[in-house]
Length: 495
Ligand SMILES: Cc1cc2nc3c(=O)[nH]c(=O)nc-3n(C[C@H](O)[C@H](O)[C@H](O)COP(=O)(O)OP(=O)(O)OC[C@H]3O[C@@H](n4cnc5c(N)ncnc54)[C@H](O)[C@@H]3O)c2cc1C
Image (tube, rainbow, N blue to C red; front, side, top):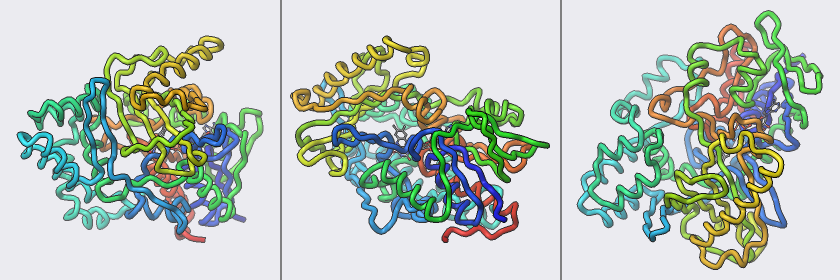
């Protein structure tokens, strides 16, 4: 009889683990506490408009180990349309300043030299660092299954990257830009406005633009919801079973071996293996009562910074509003929306490039801003409702600054708060991508197993600082590779 694999959580990590597990012949069941699969990779519909909560880029749309995963899990198939934007984002402020980040590094370099010829040498240096980091290739195999040859093979290709890691691995963006010491006021303003005093890793910035430069971080037409549905379809096709409205409360452990889960309604579900893709903190410290924690894991969960939670205000606009840039970031200081003082401004995502997001002749526009969890933690009842009403008003006036006159055409407004994210996905403090990639943790990862606990694995965004869809899906694949190794069966990626 096939061994049973029980997966907690039907987000991208859970579905990836589920697909590979079922493909490899395990009797696979996902238990999901919500009524739909996808986790944070989701969207919702209001009066014909679709409001996307996740996808604006997907690393691995054209090549590499992530691309293989997207094809194997049906995220990318023959019918998938990928959009590579020419402009990555446009930075503005209320005083009329403007700065553009192009996806193509050569194009961006030209633009930067055009606005700051005095910084030509430094601009070229920065852009070269980005080009070099394009050589970065994610490993196909989990660390536990790599052989020395796997490392030796990549040394010649990766040498320039090791050099970058050595030079910038322990710098924040601010420290990196200070080091470059641009003379141009405009460049200094833009970089400071984007990253300011944030402990955001310089390497994360450099690597991110390299993916775009290679057209390997595109937007998938249709966005998050159909992406998750395609994974779900694949999971069912390969024989997996998913059940909704089931929340795991505890992982059952016998003799240091995970043998199933107890749901919040008291039901016990037994299995040969348990994989948790639910929130990392909840899994380790609540479902497992903190009994299987290494020093490294404990340190990470106590010390590593989390992504600041987000408020998303989505607008259904009753006319076509075009935008050259898919993302506009207004970095003006001293703005306030509801109770939140905007330390890092707000972003506007104009989806006019994707006609599946709104009815003909209309446009979906989404605004996001960081709003620390402490503002939301204890906000309940009327205070919560009133805050959402205030946010709606303030957000519309911000939108007016970017698109004057637009408020007369706003048909629908929808406010999703950090509490919404926590309620539907259980993610700790609304930290939507888990641990922030900082100069301390950028090159670190957490293990998929816990010390002394057999037959239990973790997958998902909490294992890689920076989170995101690719590491979530990748760790989903990796845990099944580890289980196959344990079961002494050959890991396969088709069925
Ligand atoms: C606004 C926003 C924009 C983003 N943009 C991008 C982007 O452009 N590109 C990118 O790569 N990434 C992006 N991300 C990040 C990406 O969405 C996440 O990193 C990824 O979806 C995490 O997947 P996961 O499966 O690890 O976790 P989750 O999506 O959090 O899934 C966990 C699942 O487990 C379920 N669950 C939790 N607890 C239990 C329980 N006790 N019992 C049963 N089920 C449980 C939840 O309901 C959920 O379905 C974005 C995220 C947000 C919020």
